[in-house]
Amino acid sequence: MNRPERLEDQIQFLLSTIILRELRDPELGFVTVTAVRLTPDRSQARVYFTSMPTSGKSDEAQVALSRKALGRAAGFLRTHLAKVLDMKRVPELKFFPDASLTEGNRMEEILAELEKERAARPVESGTNEIPEA
Image 1 (cartoon, rainbow, N blue to C red):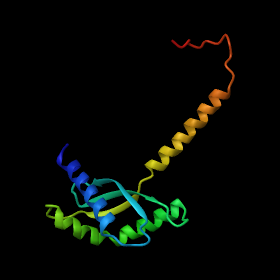
Image 2: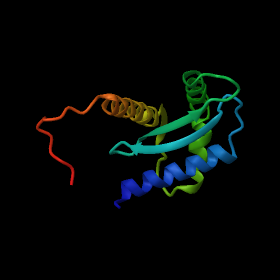
Image 3: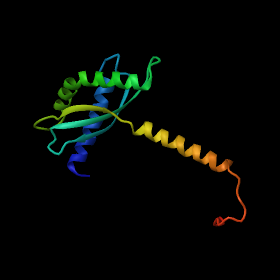
Image 4: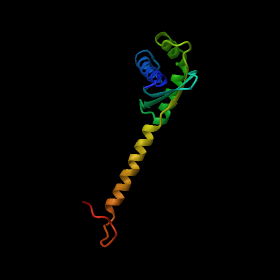
């Protein structure tokens, strides 16, 4: 693994730890940092996160609240990163919701629906199907 990828992993781990232990924002909810991607010049870090809804809020509403809370805490998080990382300049943090989990669940639902349709369709005899071994 080369240096930028190690640095991204280290920033992800540190941010996860700081968010879990240090941030006390009621709008934050339960946030998981899923990935960090640095720009080539390492001046900015795109931080991807997921957020679980709390107290009856919808997924979208909780993600929006969490994103705002993380945006407000960006300076605090950078300060904590600067204490630990051996970097001349700590990257600016930009937060983005990670939709890969939602998209993956949607794909699973589509595949399950297709499988149900295939199972419900009667098998026609005399077709050019390849017999299973």
